[in-house]
Image (cartoon, rainbow, N blue to C red):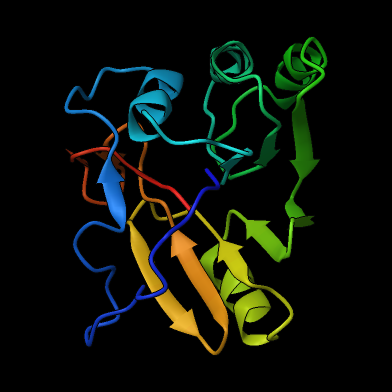
Length: 174
């Protein structure tokens, strides 16, 4: 989700400071679009960006119905039936399945998105981007690498698979 995130995106431990990841909802069973809409409530949104792991085709339809702004999605390693997701995305002019990664300018900010942290980190270290996003581990994270903000928005559904636990869902507004 693009809007504005504080330029103070890193504290001494490298973790995101309190408030940079806004709780999306307190219901772990909420749909992705409900959680995203709650996170962005009252905020002008220019685009929605997904970092992968959509798991089921209904998530793509859910995002297509929930938002009228451009929705840019990269693949993860848990996307389920990609062919069906492509057919569903084709129903929405504003939903773009970008593939394994995305490199796109949003206004003055060049943005790189990959599901995988090592790839996003390498993009951030290149000094080419203002923002690099990833998702794979579902752990909210923010750090500044030179002039690039490296972000993992966390888990919008509120589940961390590695820990096998439900957590407060998160999303990033930038």
